[in-house]
Figure 1 (cartoon, rainbow, N blue to C red):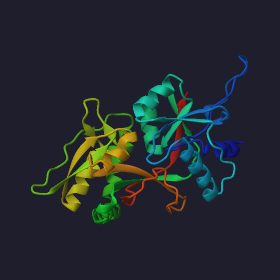
Figure 2 (figure 1 turned 30 degrees about the vertical axis):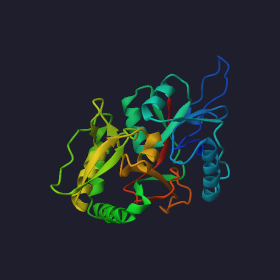
Figure 3 (figure 1 turned 180 degrees about the horizontal axis):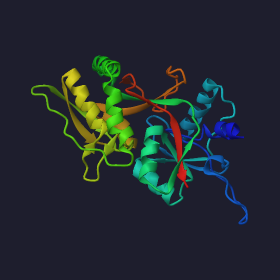
Length: 290
């Protein structure tokens, strides 16, 4: 039974929207565990992806189902898109939606900070990869970033930054540290959102903190660039890049098979951009009320 529900839940995600809600129940009947509730009538929350609307998302889920070979996938009954994580969290708390989903590290951080939330872990497919993105004319710059990311993986730096700034945090606020400034180096404006904690965090006072700052500080040293962080809502990332408000997006989401091979259907369906190799991979989990 768990395997059946795991398959049924897998597609009810956008950014990873997992379906697991219930219909009406008689008062005397105990509610089933959150991870075993049916998906019929589910109200699903999702961060607005780049290049996809609700219909595009449904096509995306169908395409992924075919590629992954999971014919039991179903599309969500209703998807409500949000431009930022805070509004989606509040919608879940007020029961405007039944659940939303997130990459595993993000979901764990959010649940650690909200006692009324719980995780739905079903090893949902596909897995996600975080990459950086620039306009296509900056492909040479992305090649330089790719080399630096690969080197950071090989020498253990990325694992160390992830452990210190994400894994070991629990639900605590990350530390805000300034990015070192390199005299005479070019400055690139980077869009950060605060919508992928603890990967991408902006503190209550508006200060970016944690992994995004630590990672960009290390990357800047390796490619001899300064980074200026610009706060942008997740749903506005595409327009911020195309309008020249920023030079680079800190995260876009790609989709990958269990073997780590990139799938032809990325969640952020960006056109005319150069996208880096992933600097972090993550599983997919749902978040719902206890």
